[in-house]
Length: 93
Image 1 (cartoon, rainbow, N blue to C red):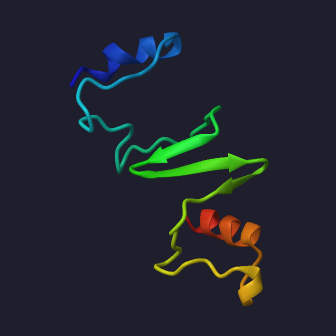
Image 2: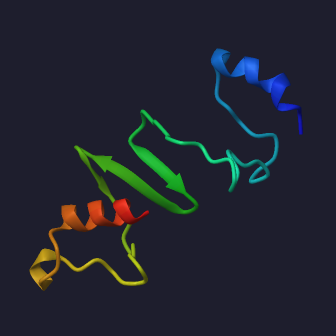
């Protein structure tokens, strides 16, 4: 791995895609050196085979999504409204 001081000056000059050399061989951040925030301009986030999409000011989770091992209860089934369930799940991480 290159020395961080060699790489740091180039971060503010990125004008192309950032593509790792090997498939699934590069991490972004570390368990003890995490990034603080992530800002994206696209409308989809691909995590493995799951895709999370932005819909207006909310998000659409993939079919089969679970929270704490259970499917979120819908408002019709006596659960929270869908927008509250999603916000609660995001707040918990």
